[in-house]
Image (cartoon, rainbow over all chains, first blue to last red; front, top):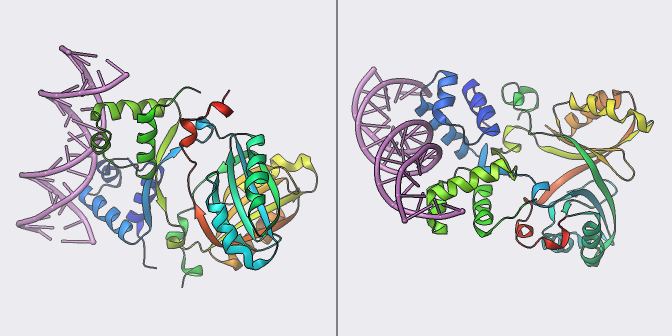
Length: 161
Length: 161
DNA sequence: GTTGAAAAAGATTCAAA
DNA sequence: TTTGAATCTTTTTCAAC
């Protein structure tokens, strides 16, 4: 991993919060030329530090009111890959991870309501060959949700290699 | 919740994947005027369906290699609020939810490495008054991660109210 | 690496259909 | 509600420092 300077960090802080913020405005705030902002962003893209720009869609506004994390136990460990394939077919599952601990797989589901969540689990997830059982952690409320801190970029000697 | 037509859905599909895609290009593809694209996006914003545009930052590229979900048990249920306040002070905790099931609170942590995760848990999370214990589900791999499906927008009679 | 100016592309407004 | 044309803003390029 290569280095980031103050300008890179400041640009990232801005565009991460607002991907459509004019480069010219960022330039003005940082007291640099807009062509420099342009160049730096291009490089950050090339390095893979930033990926696409995305509009955040409010899930509730399009009908998804039930959010739930679900831990999945497998009949045998070797079923893992085919279970993931099965889970991938269910559009309401937004994230799927291999994890340590009591579960082999950990997923995130957004459903219309609790009834819909139940249907997804019983009629779809539990029908996948290899799934032994599931435990649901239904989210009553999300207290906070935020992106990774960027401080690490400027003082990361300790953990870098 | 009010209604979405085909144009709204198509615009959303586009800008969700690429928040900087030129409106004029979207207009061309949908065979409508760019001022209509402009108007529709403005309305989607006003309705709260779309929020900010964000650049996606690759966590690994800025040093965060360990992702973990962590379930938190409380000494007593009434500690919940103050524990959330304490968790909010730890920048490596990116998400915090009240959940059903074995845990009271469920969080997402991004740390530099496993050693760093251990430090966050033992030296910070476990020191918060009210925390009885934690279980970690370290993510070995994220098989997939995607946004909510938009199909629901056009055929959501069943679950709407 | 950085800048400023020119050229190209895009966003925004608005009168009219 | 939608469009097309005019205007304004932003992005992109590039020669020079």
